[in-house]
Image 1 (tube, one colour):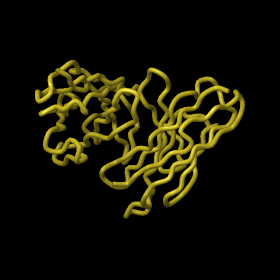
Image 2 (cartoon, chains in turn green, cyan; image 1 turned 180 degrees about the horizontal axis):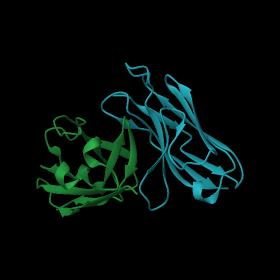
Image 3 (cartoon, rainbow over the protein chains, first blue to last red; image 1 turned 135 degrees about the horizontal axis):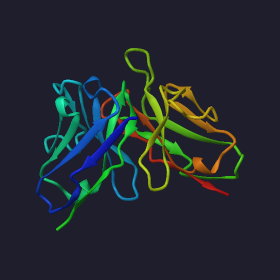
Image 4 (cartoon, rainbow over the protein chains, first blue to last red; image 1 turned 135 degrees about the vertical axis):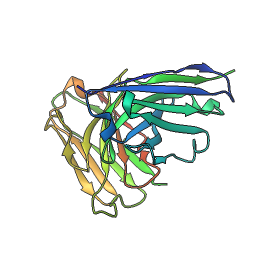
Length: 117
Length: 112
């Protein structure tokens, strides 16, 4: 059974940094692209980042490019999201997702990030 | 960016009934490789999203055949037949054809 368990969320002040983690199990992690998707409170879904199997290629929307960095450790079956210069509009539940080709096949339960002073 | 527009925003249905949700994209979702990367997700109350349909019409593992997807180019539809209580929640379409990947605003399915 595929399991994705996010951690690292919490309350952080604007301008500060936070690093999210996602522990994966139930599939061969190194064989799959992975991604982060977020959902602001009572809002829809927004894709945040994608990383290739080796980690050599990463993709971001303009809203987070230059502030967020996605990375992975295949030996630990773990995915990460380093978030810098956080803004109030980054407040959201962040989901880790396993990519099958170009769709989000499996999702974690999410971790809430609140950016507020 | 590709804008995904879902209609209606909300939908009321009786158990056992049938509903359709529309998803339109601002640009064609046909990829250079000929595939169309349009998928559908359901977010049940208090849960994370789950994949229902990928590449327009392919049901994901374990998804009931009461769910069907159709469409092409910029116009897509999700149909749910014989609606059950477990089908209630918010449905999203999403595109993976072009970066940045984008989602529709969601359609909330409620009981009449």
